Length: 75
Image 1 (spheres, rainbow, N blue to C red):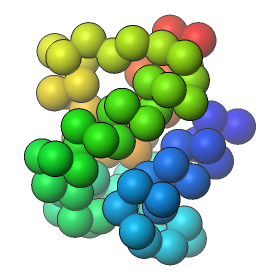
Image 2: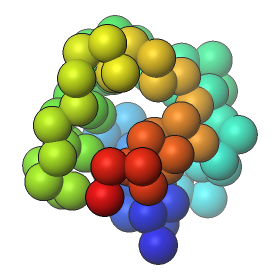
Image 3: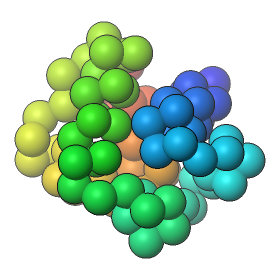
């Protein structure tokens, strides 16, 4: 499932427990991701899923659900 992979990537990149990450989690407000974390997270997702996320699309990603929805659309 896409969410499970995303959750594992976020946990690794942000150094947090996977069970604290939910679909509704806001990357900055709930998970503490700053702008550098967000860039690194996008790069890790691109590598894992072998996709390229446009900068405009990346800026629109605010929640874990946004990432899942984006990937489900492009995969």
